[in-house]
Amino acid sequence: MKQDGIDLSVVIVSHGHEGLLADCVKSLRGGLEGLEAEILVLDNLGGREVEAVVGGIDDRVKCFGNEQPQSLSQNINEMAEKSRGKYLLMLNPDTVYQSGALKDALAYLEGDAETGVLGCRLLNMDGSVQPSCRQFPTLPVVMLRGFGVDRWPWRPAFYRKKVMESLDHEKQQLVDWIFGAFILIRREEYLRLGGMDQGYRLYYEDADLCYRYRKAGLRTAYFPGVSFTHKHMRTSAKVPFGRHWRWHISSMMRYFREHGYWFRPDLGSDESRNFTTEGTGDTESRN
Image (cartoon, rainbow, N blue to C red; front, side, top):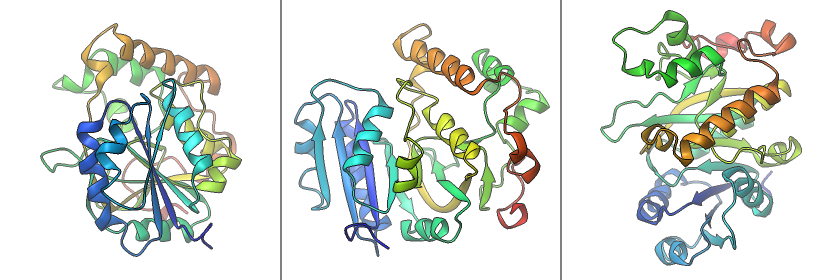
């Protein structure tokens, strides 16, 4: 049943992304076909530029602005409270819809009560698949990434497994966590579980959300039936010791501290239920 007649609330938080927003919002028309939807755009910097850019694109757009900048988690939580849809889509402003029907993604969640978080296929600007699924972080993997392992000619087998290099991006399947560029969830379930942890300024809030969903008995799935291009900037990696780099490190430390592990996720009895994938199976074979 729809909430106030709305199937889906799309939430987009802009932090000086006016140059990207118009393409993002315009592109949603195709993906939202067959759905009653609203598009909530929040200007984290509090100016009126966002409303000027996207206000006239679609009559489903509602613009909001902050008096003071806030963390991404806090912004998402406040927009979730204001939204009216049964389902909530957290979407980055640097994404552009490419293919598939969002109503099919909603139908996936509608038919699978054990899955609480759904991700889509993300594409690079050249159309190649952008890896966006991972097993839960561990300290060795984080350290290797810090040493630039993705640029090495050879990467350890355990690392390739943890970052799910062998994932078949053509198959629906269970994963541990998905990138926050596209996160589809049930709104009431999200609010009941407390939303995003507002202790994260930026980074790791997506992994943290999926981990807490897992601890609550809800899975995360990859759904390739919907595709978005994502201009993945990796700001923290560009300026070592800069502000974004410091946010990344502090968020990483918070994640491990809050969940009480460094090397092996503490999933308890969930581990025996075959939730964690190695990037090969589909959802039907893992239920």
